[in-house]
Length: 135
Image 1 (tube, rainbow, N blue to C red):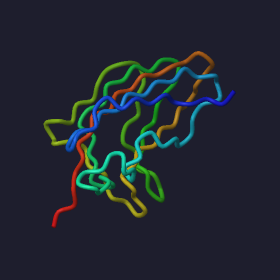
Image 2: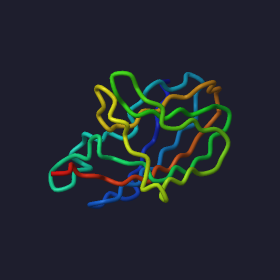
Image 3: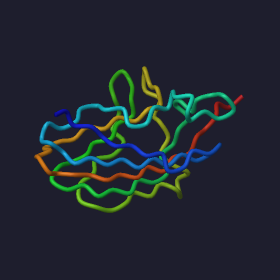
């Protein structure tokens, strides 16, 4: 059986997006799974997807038996965070961590697990702010 992440959109308003992700590993691990599709019309603001204007404001995590690597999607993905154990990363005072807009950037977020054994698990909650292009 292939491993898959369960995703739940907790909030999807004109400005804020909160996504909760869970997984119990079967030992096969995950590689560059798109967990937030910033190009999706489902997350649009005024008919426009947030794309590279999406910012991560907070990450709450509980990761056991593996390491979770989050990356911004691009031609060469750019690291966002590496998580293990439990805790939270709060970037609200910085107005969020923006996408670095590397070549080929989409604004989407990818997830990879490292060292996942059968029965290892994670729960993540990502709080994001949808930006809009500046005119």
